[in-house]
Image (cartoon, rainbow, N blue to C red; front, top):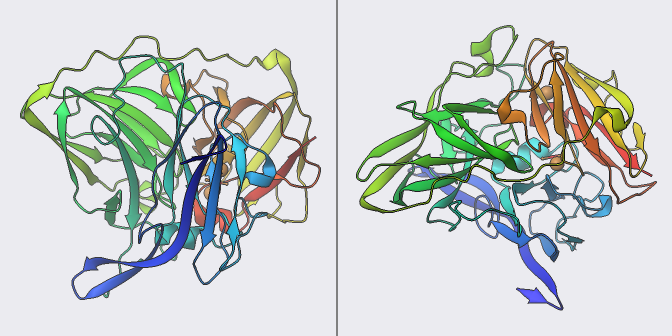
Length: 428
Ligand code: C2O
Ligand code: CU
Ligand code: CU
């Protein structure tokens, strides 16, 4: 609803249960319901306010992942919401159309809260989205929130991170909270907004028959032009929007197959060989025609390395970044407002990490000195780090300063994040 020109949303984090195993209800948590939360949606140029009520019996927070907003509104570890309290962040939507998301970010407890089901999508729209893209929510524009769960013999999502270095690798897949889901497609083309909302697992999404699809958007919005692909790798927190074409009457399976994790010690130990059916698409006998995907999707202003004020180094190893564990009382980096920066990021462990930066969307400059592949050619806020490779990313810090309230950068494998693989920067 809109109050005094501000779009207002209500989100209540509360405990719930889910019937995954007959007779053994699984304790969960969700926003406004037992599991996950509503898709919030607003347009560029709108002011939004979210009334976040915490009906859990412990503190949490709600972070707007991928959103450009003031640090006081970010919902990170510095904006906890105590049990029984409410928090009302308000900000201006000021970024291109994108599939963003929200999730708790209380320091040390993020994995547990997200694993219980606290997460949802935040879709940003804008005027510049070209006509011709499937865009009817729930009809030809469908969220696909993917989470793997380790389910105990008596129900319950296990928080067992003893099996490997990276966290929970479950064998039960939930898509929008459902097991073995299908979707009835009524149009020739359907757009899937994929979100990897898992705590640790990296997926490789594609179709069982290897058909090509068009990648149209990455984390921060539409690509300059669609990229034809047969599969797309998404590490925790990454998003991709894809458009797939179907023939009348056919059924196809969106799957996650073996995933290339780079130079990791034992790929199988990190889920690299696991395969999942994700979502079955069943096309009706007659499909409404859809226009072809436009050849030009967005105008992305390329940031130039020559304009960068500086180069910062980030080495991810063990549970530390640059040999430091997260300390909420320490500012690790100070960035000048208005500046463009190149960050060089690398994973020096033989197992997966990724890297997420709050406040901004970045562009990938290079990987080991080479141009990034086309699927990494758009706006990103999270990137998978293959071991031993050197990733250079570039970003501009336009506005929103604070000497006191920092933004975060961290590994989005939530076990790692909780155990200290996070740092803090302020924009001044
Ligand atoms: Cu999706 Cu700092 O988080
Ligand atoms: Cu974030
Ligand atoms: Cu990590």
